[in-house]
Length: 160
Image (tube, rainbow, N blue to C red; front, side):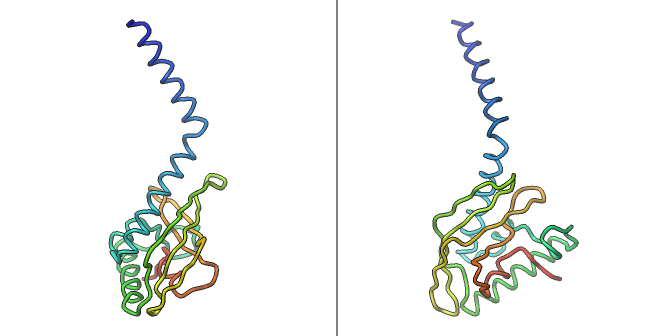
């Protein structure tokens, strides 16, 4: 019985190693991106912008350039502009159908969102979500491809 248990553990270990080598990296990235997007959207929909920012990839130049802004400055800027947008009646009301996929090792996805825009409810299907990574994958941008006023404030692009 003891030998059977050892063989079972060895085979299980080998299976997990092979599985993680073949599928693990993409699955892990996809899972992390999905978790970050879910948390970001949940907090943004509750107007908890401080917590939402924890899931934002912030940047102050081009999306793929080194970040030169301090995190506290980026946080203040991002939270402030989203609070201002909320006061003006534009905010994320809800979301549904979050879908994350991998593209050449990079996660991206789509989500259906409901925005309140100056007090009027607007539905946006298939809003594109991009991700970037410092220490972990985080939400970089939401894009409806309709150039809406809320896209930039909800993105990670910040200025001092």
